[in-house]
Amino acid sequence: MKLHRDQPDLAYTITGHGPGYIQVNATRHATGLVVLPDEVVTDWAASLAELVPAHFDVLLIRAPEIVLLGTGARHTFPSPALYAVLLKAGIGVEVMDTPAACRTYNVLAGEGRRVAAGLIPIG
Image (cartoon, rainbow, N blue to C red; front, side, top):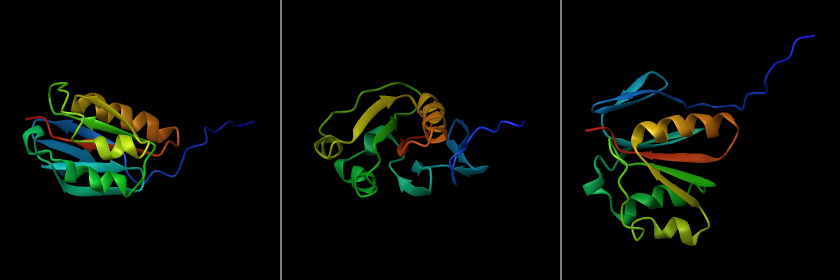
C-alpha cells in the first residue's frame, strides 16, 4: 500500500529570499509583493516606510483568512492603523520579519489554508 500526503493545489510557493529579492516559483521579484496560493500581486510596498493603508486594499478584496506581513530583515511592528481595514473585516494579521513570513506562508499554504503574505524585501 502506498500512502501519499494529500497536497493542496498550490500555484505559488516562495522558493527563496535574500538581500533585495523574494523568489516565487523560481522567479525573482525585486520589489514588495503579495503572495497567495493562487496568485501573486507585484508592485506592492517596497519598504516599510512606503507602506500605507491603501496597500492593504489588495489583500482585503482577496479575503484571506490570515495575512502574514513580512517587514524586511527586522521584525518591526507598523502602526495597526495601517492594516485596520483587515482587522475590521475579521482577517487575522501576523507581523514578522520577511524570512519568517516566507517560511510560515509555505507551511500554511501547504496545509490548504487561505493565507496571504505581504512581503517587503530584505534591504
